[in-house]
Length: 467
Image (cartoon, rainbow, N blue to C red; front, side):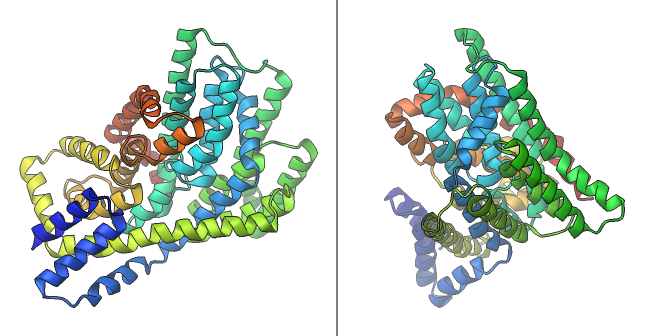
């Protein structure tokens, strides 16, 4: 009967049936053939699977990302990154990466990064004479930062499945995201040196000074609030004063990106200080996005707001249907002791954590080429987590490793969504886009090795804030 469950699922996937329907359908086939449970159990378990408070964060993070993407924020992020690093050799390549780092703090998905900033960045690089393959490659690689730097939809899903703090996962993604960005910028520097590229904008102290002033405000804002609290002001009053000063500074100097960049600062600051949960933080991100789009920048219209809301409903429905289908499939995997058999097989093969992590990386890279990340997380976590726990591997660290593997899978055929998005944006065939992305697997896989085998990269900040 267990083989009927797995064979029907793999057969449905091979025939091109969407993964959610394949999971729910194979579960129904198993229940009908076994005769031990009524078919209504499928519906009951699917509804129970999405009856989760942490999952409320999903639609709100999707909405916040869509609001930022449709409010003209991408142009501001691009201009800010251009001011900061556009003067360096291979300037627009560095701009591409820094822009993705910033946009990752608002979108939470690789596809939104590729579709939002990718359109602007590829066109700009093409206009400045960059090779189209290089432009597509660096855009694809930098898009993988979207779910690593908080907020992150895959982290929300993993946290729910693994019973791990979403706040810890968010904080854990900061340093790995910086490491990945640094390795990508080093790769751009290599290509710039090899091809003798120069900068794309002239170096100006005034432009650089303004960009660094924005960074100083972003990083100094939480410190200012902390100082006001130490001086005896209540938290709410301290935040209100800091917000008034922030808006006054933006109105005076007309900053490009300081207000959007405050999104991840608000989220991480609020969660680490215990002001709100990740779910409440997602709502706060939506309120902040609405305030910027409707009130401050006035780039959102009510017609656009309706369009964004409909897009959010569509995306949320897709994600939650996958979660619901995976819940019944995962429950049956556990009930039929498939997860126990996998754990026993792995532990019979090795009790060494680094060997298991190597095998898990190979498996997740392979699965990521065929399954959408949400579905892959929902299937793999029940199978791999028991082994992770028995080997003493930190589940927060393993969550980072899993999500990064699945993000790399988005760059590959046959199911790589980032690959298809960039092929459409650049007007290239899927084959040429794949070849353009291949060299960028070097910094991504090197990042994966570092994050896998140096757990401190992921765990240093969570251990600092969550003692």
